[in-house]
Image (tube, rainbow over all chains, first blue to last red; front, side):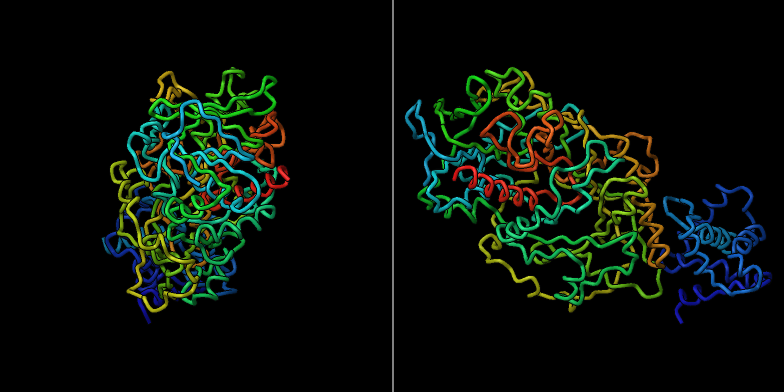
Length: 118
Length: 517
């Protein structure tokens, strides 16, 4: 499986996302393969500067998990981060970071990456 | 038949049935339709058969509005006109382009896209294009490598372009025109005035001058102005001996609504999927590619976001690249290179699928520079007027006041946000916008550019108070004067104008045949 494939199958299961490995998985946006680590770190830093309440790993992880689809949060359905990202685009939960139109979830992923791999 | 007007006795009068002023894509397209007919056609060309700087100087003008390309470099003043350096990009206007759009002031044509389809089909042949097919699926059947991105067509679609060799009308059609017994081509014959009758209800004659001091008249039953968007307006405005505001200008519309296609580097696209899709559909190799696609918003998305029509071309790039606009990439002194003869000039009509591109599949790039091709909103304050300076023939020179609106500006951002959301939803990629796209209130950037596409100074409308020409391209209030070319476009669409202006010229020619029969 490619690196991107691994990213896309990270599953946001009911109550998951608390362990360090979960956190590390969340911190791997699809953009990592496409843009590379340096660009993703830069996007992450820009996001953290722009959103004061989401500057550390815990708050970013919480923000990603709390924005999961309702059915996933209730444990009724499992959803991948990739699905959550696509859902963001459908629902227009987007943000412009460094000129890039990103889903809020993946922007947080970039921020988390910049914290964990800065 | 061909006559160099410099050899005529001074004060000559030439009679004909149809007088066409200008031998570019529009004028030659019409003249070819009349070859072999019993009518005498007089085709007047200001230049000769080749580039002459002294002729180009007649087009020198003042750009008093937004920064614009020098007009004497943007247009060519000799037989064949600007097809002498065009790039050959062809596509049709979209059905929505013809409709009245509430969010686009002064939009709407008095004709529909369906009215042009059969003329588009005929124009394909004149421009050495393939079949009249502009659906991505049609081209994918011809070349399986041409696969459009799998986006939701309700939001984003792949609009097709075809590429002319590019056909140089001056080279390709010279023999047909010169050999035609009933088509009388006069070169170095610059029309300086349209002379109306006393009641200003029809044109009686046109006044022709040569740089050597000769002056002549041409009299015909019908007249067609086909000397380009800027020069058509100039000639109408300068024909003010009896109508002080110029001919066809009772309602102060001639010269207004000048439009360009905004062709500017706008951002980047990165493909994010695990498998990078083939982007052959969107690639171009000049002189070889027969057709390619560009990404566009659907009509529904344009309505929903109230944006102008636009497409975006994709070119493999590097992260952070800003790119250059068309004006920046081609300084005026580089334009001569485009006039160099190409082998393709003499080529027969190409087969659309003779070189499938499937075999050429290099490593697939993920990052693409985005160049937007956006229509300009019709704007009465964007206009061509006459200045006080005169050229060597005594004609007042043009002042071009190119102006854009807030709608032009915010449409860029609206386009990219909608495109970015669809590409994100489809899991295909992400879009990056340049700073100026995001800063919709800031001045236009240095990369402001256009496609050298001049449109709209004699717009078409059924109401004489809102348009210079009617639906048949006849100048309101003048029984026998017509305008051919992109000057009549009420809106510009995002397609390069040549295919449409040739189609409209063929439509006008059919109309004139009925009128003269």
